[in-house]
Length: 129
Image (cartoon, one colour):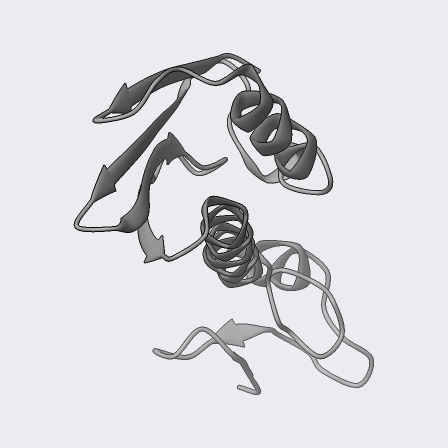
């Protein structure tokens, strides 16, 4: 995983970089495309610590998260929490939620018990002839 950091209106900090990488590795690495970099921007504006993170999920979807608070550690926690929610929700949407666990193509290739032919209706569910 490659991280690209930038700091605006503050000095570069190895401690912030290490904190972000440690928390990111705690469960988000599996949800992110490993070949693309993660862009992280730390900034201070009007006594608020802000963060902007941009990355590509497993489905090549661009994910951007912005957060701000009075404490940089709290801001990092908010960003990680929001990223985890977005990426897990995106992963769950890719999973097929059929009750028997079969995809339509797999179910259509083998007829079910008691059915002579298998058809798929307009909504993608199996229907009898």
